[in-house]
Length: 543
Image (cartoon, rainbow, N blue to C red; front, side, top):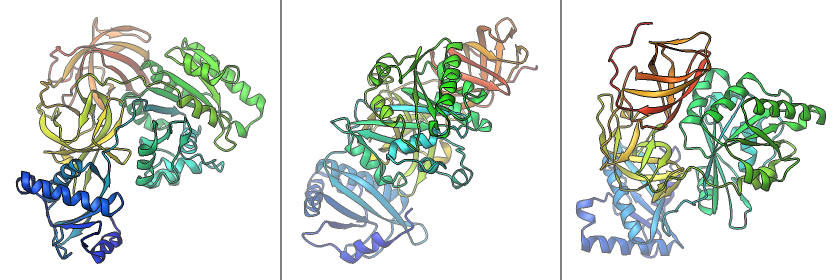
């Protein structure tokens, strides 16, 4: 809800004028305002308002014809926005922004900005990059400088463009996933944000770019490793970006993050950050340590100071890892990263499959309702699509409707695999939506899974894994305690073997072939879902 009513008061003071761009509506309904004759009249009226405003109209909703505040319920406001969106589409326009204010005890008054032209269709080359690295190794600062083009002040000022929680800014540590975006125009020139804290600025980048690069910035502090795993496993990432500070070098956390990136077969780039803070000799020393670290896990390092960025783009794969020296203060390597991101191909597109999205975050937006956000795993979704949400705790799936879709605060009429989106859902309360749930097509016949069979590899464990072992399983966006029952009764460090796995508290929607990470204390491993037909017991086994 907007805290500043100045824009509303200005629109009300301006009033409706015959040749003006402002229109007052108390409410719009499907039954009354979408009838053929009435609909045509309203579409013509909307087109007239848009033309009168040189391509932009303002609709004030929840007010009388003379501008008096009437206020309408949230449900009525949501239906009004649905109808207004359909009218705008008929007029070759789209709703670009909506603001709402309280009116009375439970009513709403709102203002919708409508712009000419169809809603944005996202580019086919949109790539999503997941960042990783030890705390204070400069990954968030690096991304902040990339998306703004601004040099850092040496104290991490540009990282503030990504952090969203006050305590994160105060402490200089990220505690949750952050998102950022920049793009490239038709000539390959970067399009950056002037002020990433303005939603409209992010929307402008999305609108103007021929090619987008989104970042999922993860957490570097060890206590929040679970959140980092969620960012690297639960998002539909194309590439990984691992930061290693030149003053500190590779750490235990660096190796752990690298292991997660490689365990999920994610092509990864390593940036040696903060090269302005140390001598050239120290940079070379850290670079050698990184090369050794990569060779230890059977990966081939490719130093971009010896090979071209074009070679790095061509060779980057699950086995070849480019290394780039960077400084967010001096600007070293920033142009190289621009050139690299400007030509890397999209890897994760699955546009032709059935729509599937795992939910990572939820919001409640006044006047809109429940919003579920995440990265689309497969297929595509359009505003108005009928979907299934679940599973719920009892294993059922709820019928919902996609009211509207936003990508980095820009409303789009459709989105496809690999896009980070927020989908406003009709038919469910925000409190009922949980991280790890999936959105699927209405015609799908999904099954909730409580137990499944998997092939796992134990990367690290102090002793042996026995029946009843209870790590946290990270699969897509879900993070859930699960009970392992290994085939043969045990698994040793370095072993690869089969195990039955049972989610301890509730069922989820999972599919054969999905990769996951499991972790409990110092124990870590990776696995692949082999079968979802396994029926495990409903109570945990004893140790």
